[in-house]
Image (tube, rainbow, N blue to C red; front, top):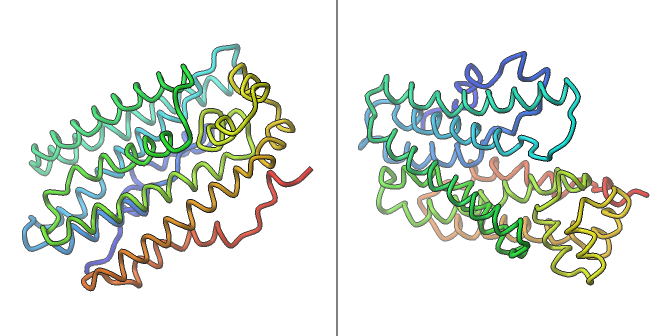
Length: 289
């Protein structure tokens, strides 16, 4: 397999001093991008030169655009000049990342790929509108939330399933689902200590589903303060729920790989390293105090 260099190629489109200095950006979707590249590369004889790399690159850029827009603060209220600048940069950066895929695919003459990715973006956005309605009316549980988020994280990448070798498609879709789940859980873990960022996330719905009436009212009316949130997280073992699901997803990935003799284990073990590191590291943030 040829070297995987999509993150390096993406840097020229996503790394700008103004953006990095004044606002927070989402992580590069490396595991899913690498997975797409690997499976397209295995079918390289059926593709044009470097199409595997091109499709992985443009999909990662669109995903970065969607993820950047998801980070935009929608809470009403007065913002400082710094907060306003950060918000405006997220809007512009998300639009910019998303627009680059049109240019790159058009220059390469891959009009069908533009249509596929555009349709996938529409599906994701429609799904998010439905999810936001369910959140607003509290018609959601933790499992349903996780299902929605995993679907959003894999939808763009599924656009290119028809270019994956037919004998690989089942394994491709299984692995994509599990890595999308790992990415989702890692994101939920990173924001666990901050009530505002955790609001309407997996741990929020986990606690809401197990809480008593008073706790549900507290969660539904507004974000609890950090101390109250920490107590709820500990009471209902929300951290453990995230880690248990991550551990199970990693086990599933390894089982899929052991059942498929055509898939190299070593590359996937490297892809699992960030998630294994999370599982094996101390977890003091919410437990303190």
